[in-house]
Image (cartoon, rainbow, N blue to C red; front, side, top):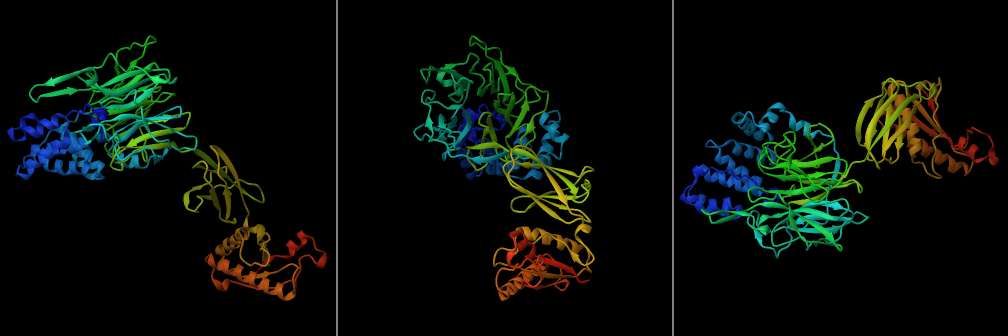
Length: 621
């Protein structure tokens, strides 16, 4: 996440002043003013001159960490820890290792951090669940995540959909001044129309809200008349002076605008803004009565916490409240978003995740622990600013999984259930311990279960996808059942299977008619289903040998029908052999129209023709 001070803002630099010296003074000044791009150049220049100080390595590690260049951060942290470091350095090193997919090495650094800070909430969580990674990777997939078309080559993030308009922050305006944190233009707020077909219009800036400073993501009341958004305290001349470094240190603050004549009116600061701490990334609840935001104000548990404040009927505000240590940690929590039904989504690098920032949810109506949304919402990289529009049933996620902050749609996976009840075709008995296999449209096996005492098997599946099930049971013929695309809910399939004794006599195997297309000898889908029964019977008795007799109806010449029936007999034998039955166990011959089932000659009905156009499976041995 390229975060700019505006986004993750208020990162606590935490450098060790005692290691600063005259040689590092210029680079330190850039670092402390958040100009990490130039600071890196300054520190690297010292390295080129032979400075191998662990302090310089740590400062480079921190600079790259804040710039979210995890590969370079890993390189310099590895050098820094050759000399004993403060606990946060080990924690950051663990984070970048995790972001780079090096989980074993990350855990090793977390153990060092935990030993140094045993009472830290992050250490306690790590020690409590050493198998956290496997649990996260195996979580049920909840959303389909796809990059959307509004993205530019610069940072785009913090998208929220209100009505048909998608609002987000972007650094795409090349005319804006360049920000030293990440060497990108300052941020502006943009909007794009979300069309009924799922496409997006070309984004345009929201000029009434944008200024020469950073503007970050916004939140809007349900009626669409009030917005709250992040910007910089410099616009209100709220800053502190650092005389030693000749710096003006601003903050990220919250601002409000009310719609007037279909345009956003005067932008006003919220009354609890401060020059001493930051607050931003707001989210207003469905009633417009509670504003959630992130801040590092006094009373925070870590770097940045999730806070809330009451919005009174007269437009005044209550006293900000911290959401507590079930949500907030000694790390950073940020980008809150509250849904209409009281689900809070937020990002954290203090709770156990896949790497860097992960998205979590918590139901504010219940006393519960935050829930990691798992993949594909979360990755080893920064995943943040998750929002959700319940009316449109679509969410939006920001992530730097591709190296740049971009916006992704997050569509909930539609859930349905297939209930299969296996029954005996002859008696109707419910068949326990039947093996039921679920397959997708490509016949890939998804899951296999045994039926319960009621003959039932239940599969949780995705909506709007076709499936099929295959049922296997000793003493019964294997059968397949196709399932068309299903809507959300439950569908029940009566899987009726034939007991072998129903179709096996002393002299032949009795199958349903195996039909062929006119003047063709290829096996049809329905024919294959019947022949699979024969395959199963032969596989259960390796001494059984079969003789296939193929017949035609009375239409066509004797010579034509004899040749046609011979070809049909050959393809039938070839199909059985292709299923693994030895060729010496099945033979076949065509009999043309020489042996009618119904001797109706030229006056046959279509049904009688079909009865004559048959294959018979005689037991030889």
